Length: 471
Image (cartoon, rainbow, N blue to C red; front, top):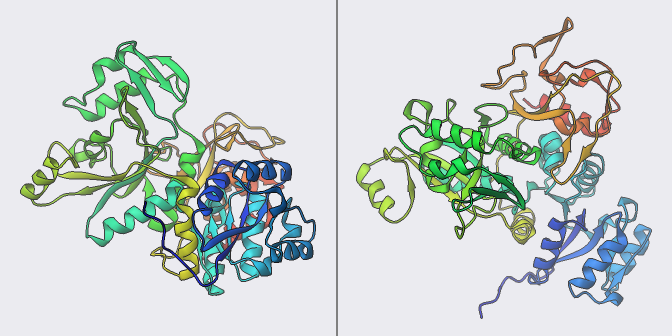
């Protein structure tokens, strides 16, 4: 058997917040295989749940402590135990090298990241919700302090950014970049039924649409009509692609993204430029597709892709023969990684933070993950993030330019409403609505503005504005 040979003189000490989630568990399990990294402090309001998880992962009960003050935490860690704590009040920041923030909660998660940087601790950001709002400012604060602030490998934003770095380093021009949606559409032609993560839907017409045909765009429109009864878009998808835009400058071709129902071998055709029969009107666009597969076929597993322009026809015909995804006209190729392994991959980022080896450049607020009213919203409406996908009822997540529009948004009323100008810094980021309430009516189809809100998380709001000010 081949084992990891990585060794450090002193193991990297990790603080994990949001420890009792699926991401936290995958990271904790992986860290058991890496002797040069150790999670010494775990934060989660569900202390008992974390203890149970650790027991299931094989951590003896006498190696777990539940301190309530930072001094008690320091003593427990010095004694070789894992400190499981309910909130930030008991964190011993002096005993931490890297924070892995995975709460997914704007208020709490931003506070942990901000305090970590104040205490000289690197930050690996797993909570894409926080990244979409405050990532630009947190990154700038980290650089000013000589620290690293990085999106965590194992989730699609960091994985896609790593793939983009490879693609650019070898010299390609990028036409589109993105990921597959949260859940595959597993279609059985024998029954005409689609299974989307246990939700079944009859779509017998898909059997006649398994090939792209002469008109690829028309085919995916017909497929979409067949599965119209299924929810395929998720706020998490839009948030992840908005994070990618911060580091790449990529925008959305249309603000809610195309979401074609597609098979992986079709991506080079579908994400071609519109003039060449594809979907993309704005080269370098982020997007998400719904993975269509048949029984027995492997999943794309929430993986990531980049579509590039090819070159010499003989070269690319050779690569097509080796199984690579090349468009039918030979002008485009799709380079992809069909996976995201959650916390299994995050040790890569933890090491990169300590060693300062990340290739990522500085983030800028190239786009905003905004909230477009799905229905007429009345003053007094309160917002709350809910569910597995961290959605907010009554509004749709959209990726827009800071000035308030995106290509293909189809909206002309975002700049002026009720006689008030919607300026660049007045767009409300989607996740800043968490816990806020409206002080103005917002008609269906319009963006929610910061001036429409009261009780938005103040610290995160200040960080968002600071990020905008960086240009």
